[in-house]
Length: 197
Image 1 (tube, rainbow, N blue to C red):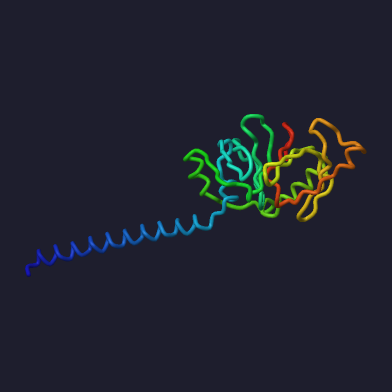
Image 2 (cartoon, rainbow, N blue to C red; image 1 turned 180 degrees about the horizontal axis):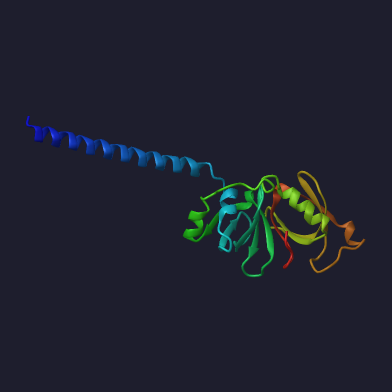
C-alpha cells in the first residue's frame, strides 16, 4: 500500500474513533439525565415550578384547581387559586395530575437545592400553625364531602375541627360540635381569601 493510502486509512479510522467516542459521550449524558430525572419527586418538581406560573391540579375528589404554587412541604402543596385568590393546602396523595405550560414543565425538572425547613414541614405541622392562629377553613375529605370550621387540636394523624360557617366566630355553643378528621382522608383545606401561610 502506498503511503497516501495508509494515511487515508488512518485518517478514516481516527474519524470513526472520534465519532464513536462522541456518540458514547452523548449516550452517557442522556443516560445521566434520565437517571437524574428518575430521582425527582413531584414535590420537588412543584417547588421548582417558576414563580407566577399557572398550574392546574386535578384532585381525586372535586373540581380541578387552577392557580400558582406558593409553598410546598413534605406531603402537601399550597396553591393560590387563580379565580378567588384564596390559598388551598392540597395533600400530594390527593393529586391525580398536574398540568402547566411546557416551559414551566421543563423548568420543574431543574431541581437545584432543597429547603431544609420544607423537607420537615408535614401537613400536620402546617395544620397546627393554622390551629394556633385560629384561622377558619373549609376542609374537603374523601368522597367530596366538605365542612368548615376552625381547627382546635392537631395530632399526628387526625385533627379536631370546631364546625361552624366560615363567616362565624366559634362560640361555646359551636364548640359542642367538634369533628375529628383523619389527616390522610383530607383532600383539600381552603383558607379564607387574604390569609397567608
